[in-house]
Length: 363
Image (cartoon, rainbow, N blue to C red; front, side):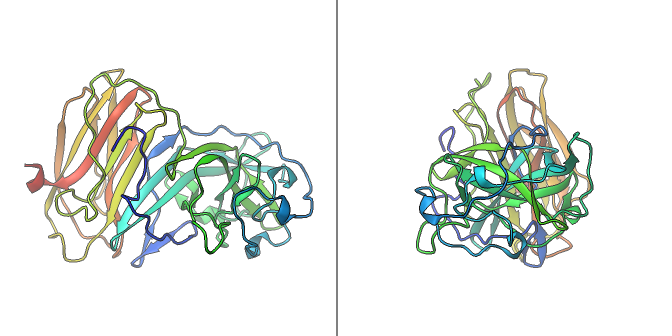
């Protein structure tokens, strides 16, 4: 895969259902752990106008739209496919502030890939202090095109924000299909420039609540969120995409970071526990390599799944590393995605990868 190529469909795009914050897989909960692709957004209230003009489908952008019924939570609000950003109004007392990085994760399950983007958030008042989440619905990501036209509503199932928590707090989570695409058209947003807004709604007043805009470029069908352009002090070839099966040769997952292209590429792959394919207790190791403008830099990783508190650190001196051996234990909930994730990647890191593979394969 060339630098800057961030496709996670491996040549085909599997159907991906629109979801709430939690995506059930085989009875388990898939909550994106993901990979960093954008620095934490500072608190900002979008400068959006008050009340909505009448929605005119003829005034929508060139992106094909269909008259999608508003989700129940949006009834009575101006937010719908084809609405213009300038015609929307948002509450001023509460806003959504990012508490971490926008993350992307692809999970392999039953011969299909599913990709989600997530952003950890908190509710903040006008002064930037923490605000109550009790009156807010679970957040989502709403996309608008260059003309300010809403081209993806995101997901709006009723789910209180204070329940949508990972370790860092509530998250907005969304797949990459467009809820505004016609039934007979491509469901993925076409290449171009967009802006994604974290959004939610205040139950008591039916008021829309938003967070700071996230500029996005969709290129070759995949979003790119952050600038690259770094030089690799110790160049090396990154592993290609994981095999469609991931097992047994590639293990349960991998993370790849490439900041040498025009846009940063960072892909995290995880697999759902495959019944009967791996022997419980088999040994696994982490294979990793990274290079940074500061040879003293390190990347840190954590193993996801029911491994216990397993974490490690790899120095970014350009050399191959093999770290640890762990016996895998079957997950408590069938269908739980397992694998490896990077918990810290310093800004100076240009290339990095980490893979969780069977010790027998690693040699």
